[in-house]
Length: 250
Image: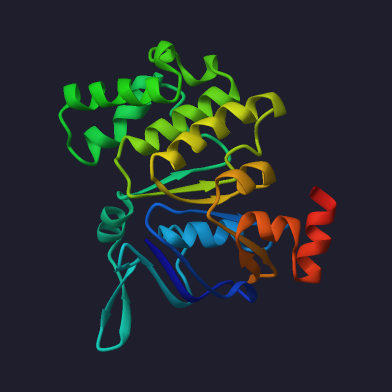
């Protein structure tokens, strides 16, 4: 579902990604871990072309992301075509980014009705199903300010799912939450993983990574330092840098 080939990303003179190569199979969960500034979130943003790569190639479901290739040369897609491609990729951010002036239900139906032109009645029925799935059926008519952080993040997940994505990206979805609210968001993510959704998750939740991920990738300094089975990497890291990182957080 995701294939990265020697992906590089610079911000001016700062090289943030230095040749990332990895694969995520359909239905797999990949967890990305590593210190702040290691390039995890930047890589996630490159997957749906919120950031342009400077070198290498990224594919989602066999399609080159953000570019068309002609005669071995890459040409950037128009913003319209890139946005069309992005419709199939759901993304959940650290901060929930809900529309504050719209109810929970209105937040969830906004993209399906405006972007996919789905009939409002159909979108409403689907939104109610999704809110039930994330345990918030009773909050459909509440506004974001009336919800806890954990509830807002679950609405953000429902909103992403409303577009029926084939891939879900999570950028530290629990890091802005109070500790007692983390579990409710991870519970929804566990259920999603069990349903077969392909997921790439930037996280500091090692218990979640150990239990749910099929692959664990440790990044540092813009490179993949170590990758493998989560239980194996967490219990028996091979690289000194991985050992030092895990010794501080486990």
